[in-house]
Picture 1 (tube, rainbow, N blue to C red):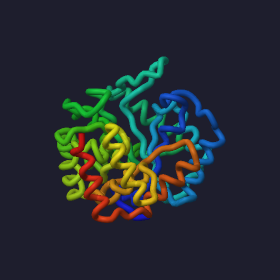
Picture 2 (picture 1 turned 180 degrees about the vertical axis):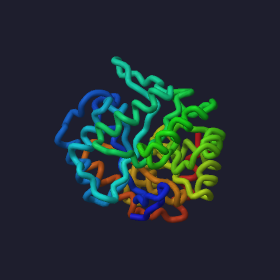
Picture 3 (picture 1 turned 90 degrees about the horizontal axis):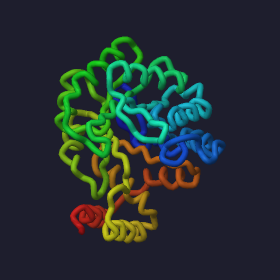
Amino acid sequence: MTSYQLGDLKVNRMGYGAMQLAGPHVFGPPKNREEALAVLREAVESGVNHIDTSDFYGPHITNQLIREALHPYQDDLVIVTKIGARRGDDASWQPAQSPAELEAAVHDNLRNLGLERLDVVNMRLMFDVMGPAEGDIEAHISTLAALQQRGLVRHIGLSNATAKQVQQARAIAPIVCVQNQYNLVHRHDDALVDELAQAGIAYVPFFPLGGFSPLQSDLLAQVAAELDATPMQTALAWLLQRSPNILLIPGTSSRVHLRQNLAADKLVLPEQAVRTLNSVFTSA
C-alpha cells in the first residue's frame, strides 16, 4: 500500500472506517459481534494501519470493539477519532460542541479505546448536521489545542468543514487532515483537496458512493464491469488516483466486503476509464 503522513505519523492510504460496526443507524450493538471483531483483526493483518472511529458511534460501541479486538495496539496503528456530537436516546445526532463537552468526549475516547493519548482528533463541526456550513470555530480549535498542550491529543483534524473554516483552524493550530464528503459526483471540495495537497495535509473522503443518480450509478457500473471490478472498488480507485493526499476509510461489517474494498488499492484505472468516470460528475 502507498502511504501518506498524518503529522508525524505515517499511514497507509487504504484505511478502515469503523462506523458500520455498530448497529442499525450507527446505534446500539452490532448484529454479529464476533464478525465485527474479526473484521477489525483482519483489516490490521491485511496492512491497514489507519482506523477511523468515534465514541459517538454506538455510542461507545465501536471504540469498545476496537479495544477488545486490537489492544494492545501494534506500534504503527493510528486511530483517528471524532468529537463534537452526541447521540440522543432516539439515535438522533446532536451537537456537543462546548469546551466542557469537547473535553469530556476526549476522555470518553481515551477510556473506551484504552489509550493515554489520542493520535488524531477530528473536530466534527455541526453548524449544519447534513453538511459543511459557515460558522466561527475559534473556540472549538482553541479547546482542542489546549488538550493537545496537555498531552491528551497528538494531532488535530477537521470534519464537515468549509475551506474558510480550514483556514481559520490552521491559524490557531496545525491541522493534519480534513474529513468531508467527496466522491465522483460530490466534488465541491475539488479546490480544497488540491490546496491541502500543496500544504501536505491529508484529505479523507467519506461516502464514496453517496449522492449518485441512477444514470451516474449506471456509468460507474459500466466502467467497473469493463475493469472486472465492483463499482465500490472502482470509485475507491478513482479517489486514490485523484490526489496523493487522499486517504480512504471505507467501512464494512463483513470480512468479504473488507477484502473487496482493500483490493481497490491494487486497481489501476486506465486513462480512458478516468475520463469516463470524470464525466460522471457532469452527467444528469
